[in-house]
Image (tube, rainbow, N blue to C red; front, side):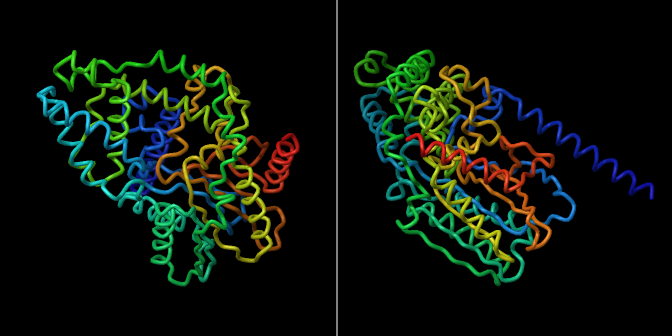
Length: 438
């Protein structure tokens, strides 16, 4: 008895410690986070946080999960643009042939050659880690909500036509079938569904970089241009650098390669991120974070409407949920797409306050608008629906951002759970109002 009591007390202490540590982590500044884990400077190249402590708040008494609606980004991938690999390699190879590299520069060139060789013919492709991420996410989904996957439950999966998305879907489904061979699976990946899986409103995209946005972004980035130190550590001839090396481009492409590496099998043998100081990584992250805020967030510099690029997806999610709620055992709706969808969708939903609006880019970071918390590789949003029985009309749900319980701008006495009727009314009115104003 005494041993059981001791075990219980230890368990409670561990839980309290983890909750305290979790809350502290949520309030850390971007600089502190990046200093602790340099990979977070990667923004949309961040690897999925597979080791997070996932807290599950028990649902109200009697409510059981019966349906899941999901949108997920593809898993870890290579960069899709060959020039991001070619440009720094060509510059450094030419310099090396002329004896213009330092010992560090020679080592960086060695690593660039290995990366370049391994990526040939695989630009934008899903990596092995990308498949693993989606298998793990699918496994946890089934472990946390087994009622949804019981017996011959129906899984309806749709993917963007990009191969990395199709393979991500396949990895998740493969894991689900391994855990329950009785599942009834339907998979599709065609242009037929691209109108909502990866819709990019031309009017909004063309008006993204207004004069005000361009000017503000230029002023913001100019304060954070610190390229000389790194280039000076790689090349031994300053006159040569002034004539033949674009410091800004060199830093940018080296940063991109350094931050994509953790997504690949080369991460165990190569490391380029350590050639940057933590201050340099932080400043590059600031510039990228501000760009994502303008391009896909609710920035008032371009009117604050960019998140509405995903209004078709949100309406589709609502309509499919309404149809599935009417079924006795609806199963799961899976959708696989891109970072340029999941970030604006998060802002459109105003998950965790990501609908923060401002014209001052200096305020973005101080209000904890960190894009890396939203769209790492394999990022996902999950709606988990609950009811007592198929005849229960009081349907509730919770929403997860990267498997963590998230908040919505809705009043709820059962948070993090919300009533579906409240959500449906609020967001349909929001979408209708925007569409009427166009």
